Image (cartoon, rainbow, N blue to C red; front, side, top):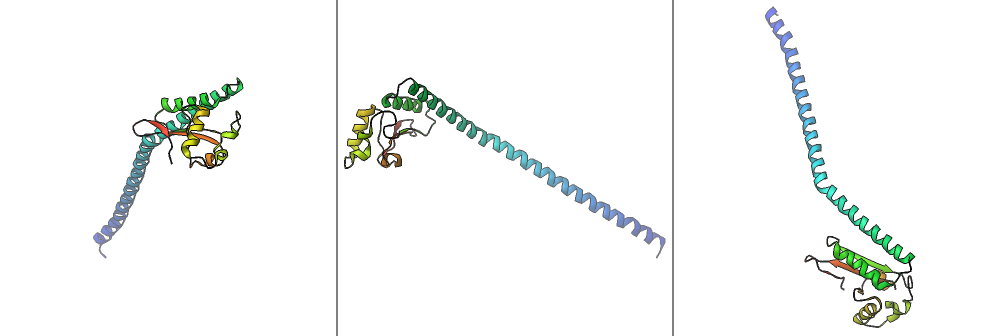
Length: 173
């Protein structure tokens, strides 16, 4: 082989290997850069979507804790009439229309002697009769949801939802 050919082959082989190495490093750098951009984009989406959701959950949890503490304080002062407690929960729902719903549930005789007026005691009565009796007992904000599991088990349960027009009303069957 001639010297020129030998020199050419000795130079081309390392040159090709060097070029291949440069291409490999470039590709790896592009891949890392693409992954970093994807992670940054995911973090932006997370901050835009998840943080407001968690803030909403925390706010609603705080409302529930404050309401429970208020009811506990009222109970400690002997203020356990269901009508005012129902009105309190409904007022919280009214003041916070972004809440989907709120409910207040009592076991029979939990705060007062209401066992004679529970739905199971009014077996055979119409839904309207039971609803009227609940309102008579607990005030105009009390509602009876005939298919509610707690109600069917004999627990008084009143539940409201806020509709798209921000109106508050009972859950209906």
